[in-house]
Length: 144
Image (tube, rainbow, N blue to C red):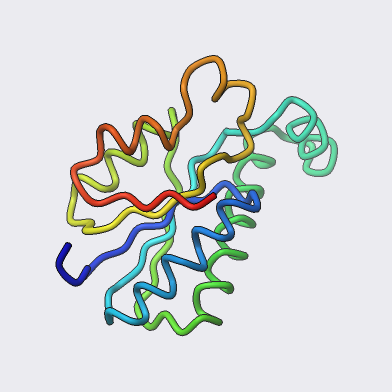
C-alpha cells in the first residue's frame, strides 16, 4: 500500500471503535493524511434507545444527539493524537452500506473495530467489518 492521503475511521463509540480512531489518527498523522470520522446514526440497542428517548424526549433528537456525541468524542481523541486535517460525517441507514458509500469517494484506508455495539445482529447477519473487508475498494484495517 502506498502512503495514504485520506484515512476514514468508522465509529459507533464502542471500545473497539475507539481503538480504531487511535490507529487511524496515528496513521493519518504519520502520513500527513487527512482523516474523516464517520458514524452511522440509528445503530442503538433497544435499551440505549429507551435511555436516550427518556433523556431527550424525542427519538429523532435522541439519535442525533447520540451521533453528535460519538463524533465529538472521536474528534477530540484524533486531535489529541495530532491529526491536523480532520472532518466528521453522520450517515444514515445500514452501517456497512453507509461506510461503503463513504469510502467509494477518495479514501485510501478504512479503519474500524472488529465488533461494535451490534453483537447480536452481527452474529445473525454477518458483522459490518466482515462485509467491509470483502467489499471495500480500499485497504481495510480491522482493530480488535
